[in-house]
Length: 155
Image (cartoon, rainbow, N blue to C red):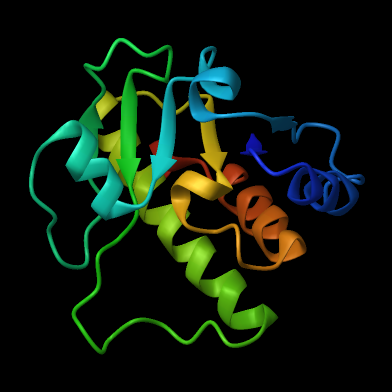
């Protein structure tokens, strides 16, 4: 599921997701769009500021949401990179590869922590730090990551 609090971005995501019946696009804040989700992807500085813990360079983490704000119970952080080592996102393929790798690492960590692969995960583009990137690249990354059977990867 993809969401944004910006109407124009939601329209872009809806156009990009038109061919994918299983991909839902929502408008609103994380609590408004993610109350029925198991987890939400949030950019690493915001995730740790709001939910505690400390970033680990190169690794997505799963944090417990204890804020009682109707957001999903688990928060998946994006991957923190070493200073000067951020991936090149200057074009569509760079944006796609970055978002795909961040989301895939997050899903692997989430499945590893929760032991469950059938999870409903909200990718709120504003909260995840993806809102300035291509809508079609985000849709393709979410579709790619959603198709992976993480149970097979864990065994």
